[in-house]
Image (tube, rainbow, N blue to C red; front, side, top):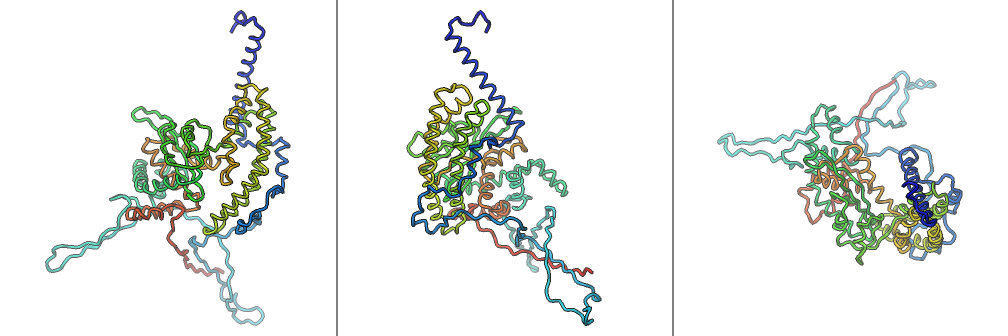
Length: 526
């Protein structure tokens, strides 16, 4: 715009100045956020906010909490005790152990007083942890043939055990190892090809890819059962993350999506879904038939799901806080609402020990203990969190009147106001979380993995990856050895009754008991 084109009207000039000012503030904020993202700390903690620092001086048990009802007698309502620090944790007994005995030479066993040979009366044991590199070995399936010496007709041969892949080279342990290495340890197949090469075995990445496809196909019945399980939850945490997928025939990639759906304590599955795009039909199809709370970000694709009477929207305070945090450099006054949000999180932290104590209960007591713990947290929220929300509401309404809508703070206020109803839903049910960090944390392995394998080879590969991510991440959620689980399930999935498929779910799977291996290795060392 040139000087002659400027309007002569003063009000029009003021509007033009304000418009340019808002645009400048917006670009400045974006530049600062990008600079912090690439060169600054990723943490969103406020180091210089006295209001937030004072929150950590709050008592562990708020005085305003109402007394626990008599039904809670079965739950230990005291906060969890801190574990004593120091000391070395004992090594697992299932690890292979090699026993080495050290004895004194015969001339040193004589008593210095009596000159009589001393007799052993005990032993002193110390442990040393050693590492043996992983190795490959060959299993020879030898089938003995039988024939009649007289007629030499109709020979018989012993049957061979079923293989995971018919006429395939790979055993279940190797297949499980390739899957865990890629989807848990983020090792692309070309790196695994090099690792196998160091062992003297050539396993092309294309062969490994075909094996993983067969593994995913075999595990599909378990995956479908996990989908049905997670949709029976009363609450689901969901989020999505982008992944590049190769476009056939073009040599280019396009952006697809992985979605995660985290079930509640009664249906503890972490299920992944793959869609070729971010269209709303993806979550709409997956969540068809679901009734309960859905906690997610403000993605508009969920609006159709919330429109019906079956699904209640639960918004995420971490997302709302992030919007305000990104505006604080341009608008220092934003630290006031950040401090109030921190108060809510401190109340959540004070309630967490009851939740953790309930989850640590035996399976027979856990459901009742969790119900009681959620009741306590709900009481704390109604007593302590509700007044903080009222203060935040007042602050937002006041600042909305004198903040430019397109400024960073104005956009943060607009986002929070648009989500306000859903941001307060967690006050209605103690089992709901204040944010959606559970789903965001579940997506982290995909964010790490895509930095290594860069892209998916096809949409079919993305769907197979979703199956394997589901099983491995659910194993990690329950502290189950993912390799041992996959190896065992692959060995028996083809003959396992479909009516008993629940036995193969990670949280219900029972491993085979194995005694620790003791190797006798005696050595006389003087």
